[in-house]
Structures are given as C-alpha cells and as structure tokens.
Length: 250
Image (cartoon, rainbow, N blue to C red; front, side):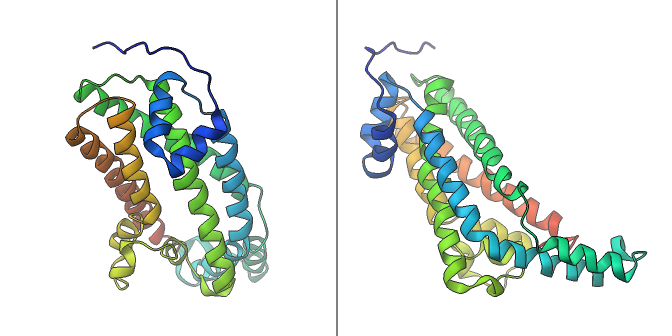
C-alpha cells in the first residue's frame, strides 16, 4: 500500500485551524498536500491554558474537598497527626504549576493515539494517508475538541461557581454529554457516558471526515475507526474514574 504524492502546496496553518472548525472537508483536503500542525499546537495550548485558568477555582475547591474526604475515609491518613491533616488540606487548596503542565502533556498523548488508531483505519481501508498527515489532522482536531472544550468547561465552572463542584466526576459531568441522561449512574458508567460529550462527538465526525478526505477510505471504515477512538476514550475515562473512586477522588 503506497501513499500518493500530491502536488505540494503552501501550508497556511492558521487557515487550516479555522477550516477544521468551520469547513473540515476543505481543511482535511489541504492536509493531503500541505500537512501542518504548528499553529494548531499553539492554539490548542493557549486554549488549554485558558481553560485551566478558568477552571482553577473549581479545581482547588475539589482538591480541598477530596483531601477532607480522604482524611475521613482513607487509611492513608490513619497515622497522620492533626497538624499534618490540616497542612494537607491547605496544600490541596493551593494552585499548582502541574495543573497547567498536565494539559499540555495530555494534548500530545491524545493526538498521538488518535493518529495511531486512525493509521490502523487507513491501513484497513487501504487509504492514502501516512502518520504525518494523520498526526497533523489530529492536532488540528484537538483545537475544537480539547482546546475549546477546556474553555467551555472553564466558563461553565465560573458561571456555576467553584463550590458547585466537589469531585472530579462533578467537573466531568458539567459539559453536556450522555452522562446527563443517567445522573445517578455508578462512577464507572457515569464517567463513560460523560466522556461522550458534545466535543468528543464533534471529534468523532472530524475523525471520520479526515479518514474519508485525507486518507480516501470508505465511509464504513472512516466511521468505524472514528467510533473506536470515541469508545476507547470513554473506556479510559471510566477506568480512571473507577480507580480514582477507590481513593475518594471521584
């Protein structure tokens, strides 16, 4: 299986970022001849940092509540003095540089696995893309799905107020998703359904469009592997929430 060699075109990263949001077919057609991801990375990081800043009050409140809950229920604090417990609560309510570093790391991980899964779809569908083009497309997809998603969540937390959130799950459920249909579900089920949000569904259609336009696969393969990406993301969220629940984090 070979990758076609289209005529080279001049890359316009900002135009590709914008078109990924408003005209994805044009954006992914451009990725065939002029793959680009630099501006998409910059925009994604800016949006993620803005989202982290907006979410910070809610995140600090969640951290404080979680530590208080762990002190009451977890054996990790069974031998801690009252002074140590109070210090842990105070530290949980402080800002941490990690909260701004983690989103940047996450976007690279998410984009890598997104591109890798779609590369398998490209092979199955005898497509014409390579990892570079799928990586570039995936990074551009991260702008509306991960970047804008973080900002919208941040705005929601500001509107509702930090005290409205007492766990990671309450934060995850703030964005419109399937989780809103089953508010009393178990932690794992709630996390799975909450991961199927308006932004991940948007990403589902963008991934399918990228496979159809950039890789030239059939619609069946495109939507199947876009669905696999969505499903794996939801399963990862569910497993993480279930694990964190054991320590009072969700």
